[in-house]
Length: 363
Image (cartoon, rainbow, N blue to C red; front, top):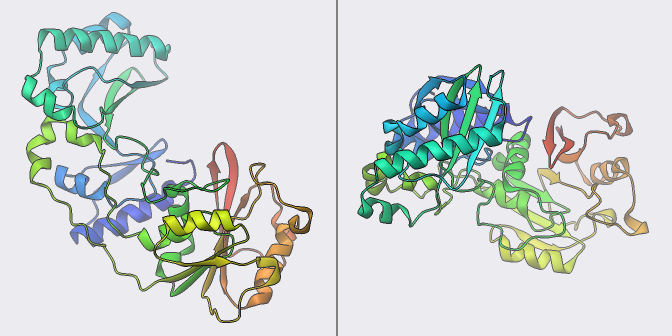
């Protein structure tokens, strides 16, 4: 997941686990860039359709071994009888990382593993019927981590990054990834408000995630369906396609660009969407509880001279409209002293290699 989102992702995991299963949250540990926990196949499969903040979900293969040289790595892969419970052929993509290990050349690690697994499957070919069945789904990515000479295999069972929801078909000039939008919504507690407004909605990502935060996402290309160990399980599983929690949220989105708003209307069936310039205020008929926005601050969106105002001006303009709670996404290098009131809370993260901050002001 994006660096900085680990704690938010953990809170989401805990909440949705309890909503889904009404049992105690399993033990977990923080891994680099993620969270590791133990779950049954049913629990794992279920959560994969409801978690919104993670970028991907990895299934840890329950087999680790020490390796200090490439011949030993090749032999381990060549004789890896345990691997046939997880994959039926050499994965198209193998991603390797190494830290504090005698094996440091990741490309050579990948090539050695690929050759070893190819030798194993030549000697132990899978059943054609089973192989044909798994061809219907995307081949999982194999992640290999060697830390302190200890080798661990994991499968990326999501079949692609989880921020690709399929809910947003049309995009604007600088779209926000869905998992970042979901994290921001969770950070601002927007999904539990009565009436939310995004006055610079673009293609509608923030409002879509606010409405969809507890909903089932139909991820049709999940790679776990290719795993032999899960074949019998996945055939009997039909995840509940209902919402984990019903939220009475109303929302409205504004934008100054008619073309962008047209895209938002194609994406978003939940919100009222209309043309409006935030610098000229909000229409009087609305009575919001919260304002959320990702204002233009990157080079990808060029503003005309009329709208090249500071974020402090934007803050002042919004506050002058009424007593709302307010959430903004801004680059980290913006000095918060420009704001008349300091944010109630903030979160630093990295988006597309850029240090960014979530800012939130209570009413």
